[in-house]
Length: 470
Image 1 (tube, one colour):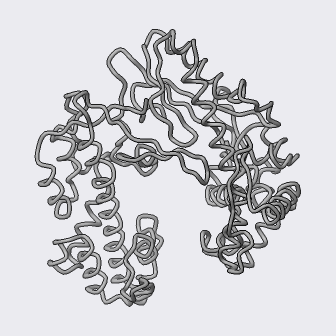
Image 2 (tube, rainbow, N blue to C red):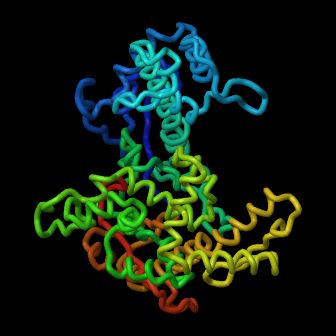
């Protein structure tokens, strides 16, 4: 059931693996060495100066001038020696007392030089030219680490595990805590997000000849379930009105965003069927504020504290608490439900999902505060995340058992959290699309789940590859 097209390679993977540390243009060679689908070569790579080439070359070349030569040998040693070679004082240490060189640490040191945002390494060099060069060097190291991750976590496993038909079959396991399915060997649920997939790995997942893929996913499923379970009137109304819920949250969180919307300086949303919007959209003009609102929305659903939010945003705990209070002020039903859920969990040592599946919480009354707080967050999170797992599982069953899809020759291939992929003949794709959406929008029919207070929205597209459908 869980199969998708894989990658075919001819050529030495070891050679490419060894070369990537020395040649930032290795991706062009990967593409030219029959990293192809169904035995076909991909298009010829563009010259290195083109927009589609890896945007790492200048930074990586400058980084070579700053780092010792011996750092070319191994990635971890490479990073350690570069940091010491730049004379930087470690800011974070591992449990064993060694300087930490994780991706998060490197990113803090580097900042974002491409946008003129310098990291902490800039201050080490008294904010001069050397500081800028150090940040560029460390930014290149971050990029090299990203390339390494792409190779080891995505490209190579797909090649190694593809069968004779160039299909990759993963194993799906049921998570006993949340009820979600997880994938392994390979983890097809963990392919890089579109905005991070500069090498377009999802283009490797294609349909059979004369067949198409339907990729369908729920829109803001967990937040919709939070609105339903808590009966939060402002959330229910927001979802009924449509548009981006995160943008609406940003309006309530930030005074300057609210004023910009009220004055017409920005628009909450726009129907592009009417042409070009007369003013910028909120998500474009106030992208940073919307991202914070999005983080806050999901953090509430997951039971995150002000302390956790302050670390995510890089602000004080007091500022994070103020934002939490502002969020709850407009949605008091959510706060009330969370308090009741935690109290009930303390009484019964368990919680349950939307469909009544129980999860035991043995540490909820622990004398160790850390364990108790973790169990309290689970008491809040499980009904939401576990409820989403229930909905997706029921939708999968409806798709799998659909007589319409069976008659048309469509089969379920893969589930990725709130998303499903099905494959079938080109000639029936429009009829299949409508049936997939019907199954997902009404997953509880026949399984005892009544009508939700918030309609489930499903975005579904027909494409020849997973990449084209996103």
